[in-house]
Image (cartoon, rainbow, N blue to C red; front, side, top):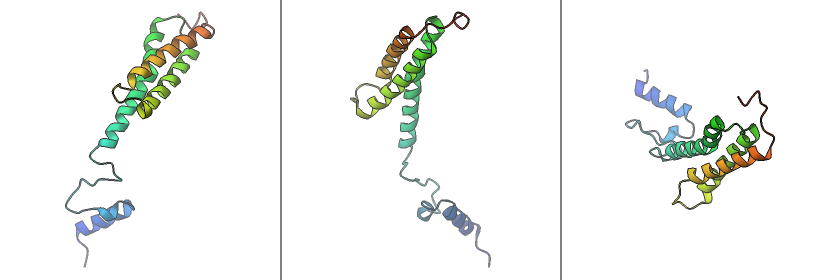
Length: 127
């Protein structure tokens, strides 16, 4: 006697998800995998990634388009400083201020400082 399609599908699901498959319920397709919940973890990751990207790239891109003295050293310092500041602020800073704001501020300061303290870009690349 052949097993029903539902029983075969259940076995495939159980074998393909070793840690999660045993908790599968046949009548529900909204299984919560590994504590993800209803999207809280995914939302947290997306928001943190967006904050890191904004604070890392806003100053180098926007200021770099209009300021001829901008160079790679300032951009690298801004990207690293903005990313680290945003991440640390998210972990240890007060919850009243969004981490993008201090991240962008530090990124802009490091961009200007790094560009001023290093040699200016060659004339061929600064056109």
